[in-house]
Image 1 (tube, helix red, strand yellow):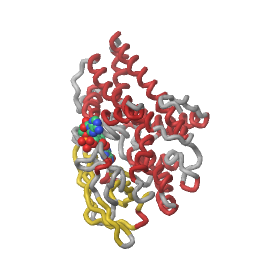
Image 2 (cartoon, rainbow, N blue to C red):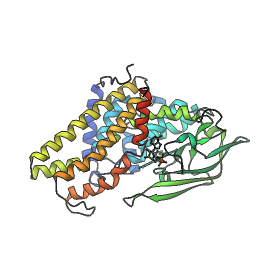
Image 3 (cartoon, rainbow, N blue to C red):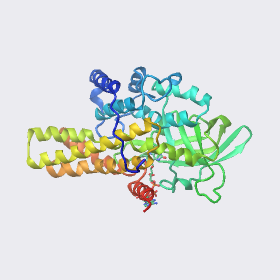
Length: 380
Ligand SMILES: Cc1cc2nc3c(=O)[nH]c(=O)nc-3n(C[C@H](O)[C@H](O)[C@H](O)COP(=O)(O)OP(=O)(O)OC[C@H]3O[C@@H](n4cnc5c(N)ncnc54)[C@H](O)[C@@H]3O)c2cc1C
């Protein structure tokens, strides 16, 4: 495979049929008016997640015995982009659906899969990602949270930070050190499936710049995890985590977060048309169409069993820079004071996006780190 060859995305008739069904469902869903116009996954709404689960729209790549089976990953992409474009509240199940479920499917024991995957597919089991630590964000090989082997299990001590939604999730996929590094910095890391109700775990919420409390600091004090909590092989944590990156970085959530503002911008231009406005919309939509093409291409590659981590790094970098461009471009065209409490929907959406946009290029890998990955892959 040419490293920068983006395979043509596969169109699926079943997916296009599903697209209409998802739109009809969203039109009829009673809470449609409450959607958040700025955050990455709309909002956290277990009832909504369960309604999607009942329709078979979560865990769409899972085998039938684990609650999936009806559709594949190309169809999953269609459902996801429709939900994101409508800013539907999918945050509760989004991480489990995108990342933790597929990781379990790949590395979990039959018992872990049987116990958890059907609950994920039903929209009833939510996951958070325990990777970053104070002083270890980009450089995950330096994590210091430690699991020590004891009789029948492990004892964990340490702390994670920036753990999105940990306070309302059921499980964490925890990355920690199970033995010393040795020669290779990435050696000695392992992943665990952690039930967040386990004694010794405490979550402390951290407010973000918009005043919302979604982040957490999660502390582990002598937390006992049974042997059955080890996810995959001891010492394979780094390999397993890098296998998740294409899933984490390539999806439409990396460039559709601020569609609410783009729509309010277009609505404002309808009332007050201008040449500058037309140029701005044209530029943003052209970028969006290109990103969508690249991202759908990666979904096709993943569905075909490839691991396009480099392509995913490019989509994440370009997509999140695009997300940050949106407020910069629109505020030059429409003279409006950003105001969260404004009656004017454009001013309110602009204020929300200005507060959330800086995080796009940090979460899931900073832009500097992603560009480093691209450069390294090119042999530069
Ligand atoms: C909204 C949001 C949600 C998040 N959710 C989670 C979550 O659920 N779970 C989780 O584990 N983490 C989460 N994070 C943490 C996130 O992944 C880290 O913040 C990120 O990886 C950066 O790590 P850091 O904050 O330690 O910064 P650092 O790694 O200290 O980086 C600081 C600066 O140095 C630059 N830098 C670092 N290394 C290099 C390098 N090698 N080359 C060039 N530049 C470099 C970075 O680009 C950055 O600009 C979240 C972050 C945000 C903003």
